[in-house]
Length: 123
Image 1 (tube, helix red, strand yellow):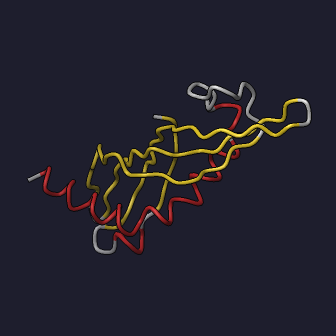
Image 2: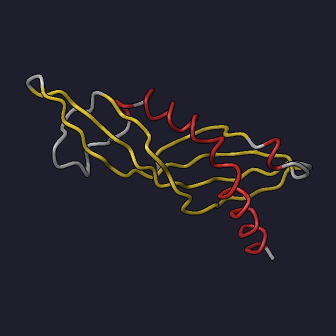
C-alpha cells in the first residue's frame, strides 16, 4: 500500500509540481555556489564564478509522512547545471550534474495548490 501512494505521489509531482520548484532550486544553486562542489565532475573548471540551473529530473520520492491533513516528503532530483569561469579573459563553460533533496510539504486535499519547498540541500 505505501509503495502505491509513493508511486501516485511521484506521478503528480513529476507532471505538475516540479515546474514550481524550478525557481527555488535555481536560486539555491546561484546563492550557494561556494558551498556546493560543482567542479567535482568538471574537466575544465576549477573555480566556479557563475552557475545556472539548466534542467532537472525527478529521481525518487522518499520519507513520506502524513501529519493530520498535510503530507511531507523529500524529492530527490538530478540537476543539470551550467558552470562558468573566466580564465585570462576567456569565458570557459561546462555542464555538470548534481543531485539535490527538496524537502516539501502539501495539503492532502490539494497537493497541486498547496505544494511548497521547505528546504533544499545537496544529496
